[in-house]
Image 1: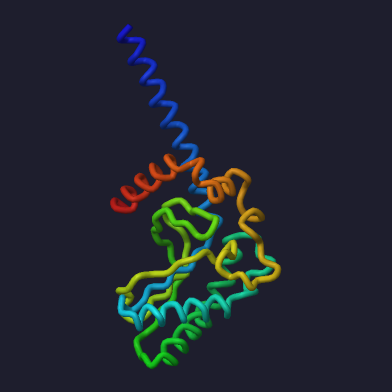
Image 2 (image 1 turned 45 degrees about the horizontal axis):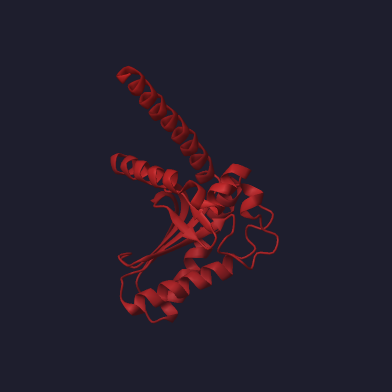
Length: 198
Protein backbone atom coordinates (compact mmCIF):
# COMPACT_ATOMS: atom_id res chain seq x y z
CA UNK A 1 0.00 0.00 0.00
CA UNK A 2 2.84 2.38 0.92
CA UNK A 3 4.48 1.87 -2.52
CA UNK A 4 1.20 2.73 -4.27
CA UNK A 5 0.84 5.94 -2.27
CA UNK A 6 4.41 6.96 -3.12
CA UNK A 7 3.80 6.18 -6.81
CA UNK A 8 0.57 8.22 -6.85
CA UNK A 9 2.25 11.13 -5.02
CA UNK A 10 5.19 10.99 -7.44
CA UNK A 11 2.81 10.96 -10.40
CA UNK A 12 0.91 13.97 -9.06
CA UNK A 13 4.13 15.91 -8.50
CA UNK A 14 5.31 15.04 -12.03
CA UNK A 15 1.97 16.18 -13.50
CA UNK A 16 2.16 19.46 -11.57
CA UNK A 17 5.72 20.08 -12.76
CA UNK A 18 4.81 19.39 -16.39
CA UNK A 19 1.74 21.62 -16.11
CA UNK A 20 3.82 24.45 -14.64
CA UNK A 21 6.49 24.05 -17.32
CA UNK A 22 3.83 24.46 -20.01
CA UNK A 23 2.35 27.45 -18.22
CA UNK A 24 5.80 29.05 -17.83
CA UNK A 25 6.32 28.55 -21.58
CA UNK A 26 3.06 30.37 -22.36
CA UNK A 27 4.08 33.17 -19.97
CA UNK A 28 7.46 33.39 -21.69
CA UNK A 29 5.80 33.65 -25.11
CA UNK A 30 3.51 36.37 -23.73
CA UNK A 31 6.51 38.34 -22.40
CA UNK A 32 7.99 38.33 -25.90
CA UNK A 33 4.88 40.00 -27.33
CA UNK A 34 4.88 42.97 -24.94
CA UNK A 35 6.84 46.24 -24.75
CA UNK A 36 6.63 48.08 -21.44
CA UNK A 37 7.28 51.66 -20.33
CA UNK A 38 9.07 52.20 -17.01
CA UNK A 39 9.70 55.63 -15.46
CA UNK A 40 11.88 56.05 -12.37
CA UNK A 41 11.49 59.28 -10.38
CA UNK A 42 14.49 61.22 -9.13
CA UNK A 43 13.40 60.64 -5.51
CA UNK A 44 10.34 59.95 -3.40
CA UNK A 45 9.80 63.61 -2.57
CA UNK A 46 6.34 64.89 -3.37
CA UNK A 47 7.81 67.26 -5.98
CA UNK A 48 9.83 64.58 -7.78
CA UNK A 49 6.88 62.20 -7.80
CA UNK A 50 4.74 64.96 -9.36
CA UNK A 51 7.42 65.51 -12.03
CA UNK A 52 7.41 61.75 -12.76
CA UNK A 53 3.63 61.82 -13.32
CA UNK A 54 3.92 64.90 -15.54
CA UNK A 55 6.62 63.12 -17.57
CA UNK A 56 4.32 60.11 -17.83
CA UNK A 57 1.46 62.24 -19.15
CA UNK A 58 3.69 64.03 -21.67
CA UNK A 59 5.33 60.83 -22.96
CA UNK A 60 2.00 59.01 -23.27
CA UNK A 61 0.49 61.99 -25.12
CA UNK A 62 3.51 62.39 -27.43
CA UNK A 63 3.61 58.69 -28.30
CA UNK A 64 -0.11 58.32 -29.03
CA UNK A 65 -0.46 57.00 -32.55
CA UNK A 66 3.19 55.97 -32.98
CA UNK A 67 2.28 52.31 -32.87
CA UNK A 68 -0.91 52.46 -34.92
CA UNK A 69 -1.05 49.51 -37.30
CA UNK A 70 1.85 47.75 -35.57
CA UNK A 71 1.31 44.01 -35.24
CA UNK A 72 4.34 42.76 -33.29
CA UNK A 73 6.52 43.75 -30.36
CA UNK A 74 9.59 43.64 -32.62
CA UNK A 75 8.04 46.19 -34.95
CA UNK A 76 7.06 48.34 -31.95
CA UNK A 77 10.62 48.15 -30.58
CA UNK A 78 12.07 49.30 -33.92
CA UNK A 79 9.74 52.32 -34.02
CA UNK A 80 10.49 53.23 -30.40
CA UNK A 81 14.25 52.84 -31.02
CA UNK A 82 14.00 55.42 -33.82
CA UNK A 83 12.07 57.80 -31.55
CA UNK A 84 13.98 57.27 -28.30
CA UNK A 85 15.67 60.68 -28.48
CA UNK A 86 12.25 62.27 -28.98
CA UNK A 87 10.97 60.49 -25.85
CA UNK A 88 14.03 61.72 -23.94
CA UNK A 89 13.50 65.30 -25.10
CA UNK A 90 9.82 65.26 -24.10
CA UNK A 91 10.83 64.13 -20.60
CA UNK A 92 13.65 66.70 -20.38
CA UNK A 93 11.29 69.51 -21.34
CA UNK A 94 8.87 68.53 -18.55
CA UNK A 95 11.71 68.38 -16.01
CA UNK A 96 12.98 71.83 -17.07
CA UNK A 97 9.45 73.32 -17.01
CA UNK A 98 9.13 72.07 -13.42
CA UNK A 99 12.26 74.07 -12.54
CA UNK A 100 14.73 71.19 -12.25
CA UNK A 101 17.94 70.56 -14.15
CA UNK A 102 18.62 66.93 -13.31
CA UNK A 103 19.46 64.64 -16.21
CA UNK A 104 17.03 62.40 -18.05
CA UNK A 105 18.12 59.19 -19.72
CA UNK A 106 16.08 56.82 -21.85
CA UNK A 107 16.96 53.39 -23.15
CA UNK A 108 15.28 50.27 -24.39
CA UNK A 109 16.41 47.35 -22.29
CA UNK A 110 15.34 44.02 -20.91
CA UNK A 111 14.34 44.27 -17.26
CA UNK A 112 12.66 42.22 -14.59
CA UNK A 113 9.10 43.01 -13.45
CA UNK A 114 7.12 41.31 -10.70
CA UNK A 115 3.55 40.22 -11.48
CA UNK A 116 1.72 43.49 -12.13
CA UNK A 117 -1.89 44.45 -12.70
CA UNK A 118 -2.81 47.21 -15.13
CA UNK A 119 -6.54 47.86 -15.15
CA UNK A 120 -8.14 44.59 -16.24
CA UNK A 121 -4.82 43.06 -17.33
CA UNK A 122 -2.36 41.13 -15.16
CA UNK A 123 1.11 40.45 -16.54
CA UNK A 124 3.16 37.57 -15.11
CA UNK A 125 6.53 38.18 -13.50
CA UNK A 126 9.60 37.93 -15.68
CA UNK A 127 11.97 39.77 -17.95
CA UNK A 128 10.36 42.08 -20.52
CA UNK A 129 11.64 44.50 -23.12
CA UNK A 130 11.00 47.99 -21.80
CA UNK A 131 11.59 51.64 -22.54
CA UNK A 132 13.19 52.85 -19.32
CA UNK A 133 13.24 56.55 -18.45
CA UNK A 134 15.41 57.54 -15.49
CA UNK A 135 14.82 61.00 -14.06
CA UNK A 136 17.80 62.40 -12.17
CA UNK A 137 19.15 59.89 -9.66
CA UNK A 138 16.33 57.43 -10.40
CA UNK A 139 15.96 56.63 -6.70
CA UNK A 140 12.23 57.26 -6.36
CA UNK A 141 9.20 55.06 -6.85
CA UNK A 142 8.51 54.05 -10.41
CA UNK A 143 5.54 54.08 -12.73
CA UNK A 144 5.00 51.59 -15.52
CA UNK A 145 2.54 50.65 -18.22
CA UNK A 146 2.42 48.70 -21.46
CA UNK A 147 3.37 50.54 -24.66
CA UNK A 148 2.61 47.56 -26.90
CA UNK A 149 -0.08 46.46 -27.11
CA UNK A 150 -0.90 50.04 -26.15
CA UNK A 151 -2.60 49.76 -22.77
CA UNK A 152 -1.37 53.17 -21.60
CA UNK A 153 -1.73 55.06 -24.86
CA UNK A 154 -5.49 55.32 -24.96
CA UNK A 155 -5.48 58.05 -27.59
CA UNK A 156 -4.14 55.70 -30.24
CA UNK A 157 -6.84 55.21 -32.82
CA UNK A 158 -5.65 52.33 -34.97
CA UNK A 159 -3.52 50.46 -32.45
CA UNK A 160 -3.63 46.73 -31.87
CA UNK A 161 -5.37 45.55 -28.71
CA UNK A 162 -4.05 42.85 -26.41
CA UNK A 163 -6.48 40.39 -27.99
CA UNK A 164 -5.06 41.22 -31.45
CA UNK A 165 -1.49 40.49 -30.36
CA UNK A 166 -1.77 37.64 -27.87
CA UNK A 167 -2.92 34.09 -28.49
CA UNK A 168 -6.23 33.04 -26.92
CA UNK A 169 -4.37 31.26 -24.08
CA UNK A 170 -2.11 34.28 -23.43
CA UNK A 171 -5.11 36.62 -23.47
CA UNK A 172 -6.81 34.41 -20.87
CA UNK A 173 -3.71 34.56 -18.65
CA UNK A 174 -3.67 38.37 -18.63
CA UNK A 175 -7.43 38.98 -18.47
CA UNK A 176 -8.47 36.14 -16.14
CA UNK A 177 -5.62 35.96 -13.61
CA UNK A 178 -7.88 34.50 -10.92
CA UNK A 179 -7.93 31.23 -12.91
CA UNK A 180 -4.14 31.12 -12.79
CA UNK A 181 -3.42 32.72 -9.39
CA UNK A 182 -1.44 29.81 -7.94
CA UNK A 183 0.52 29.25 -11.14
CA UNK A 184 1.23 32.99 -11.50
CA UNK A 185 2.56 33.04 -7.93
CA UNK A 186 4.79 30.03 -8.59
CA UNK A 187 6.02 31.62 -11.86
CA UNK A 188 6.78 34.85 -9.97
CA UNK A 189 8.68 32.89 -7.31
CA UNK A 190 10.61 30.97 -9.97
CA UNK A 191 11.38 34.10 -12.04
CA UNK A 192 12.53 36.00 -8.93
CA UNK A 193 15.01 33.23 -8.14
CA UNK A 194 16.14 33.02 -11.78
CA UNK A 195 16.60 36.82 -11.94
CA UNK A 196 18.58 36.75 -8.69
CA UNK A 197 20.95 34.12 -10.09
CA UNK A 198 20.98 35.64 -13.59
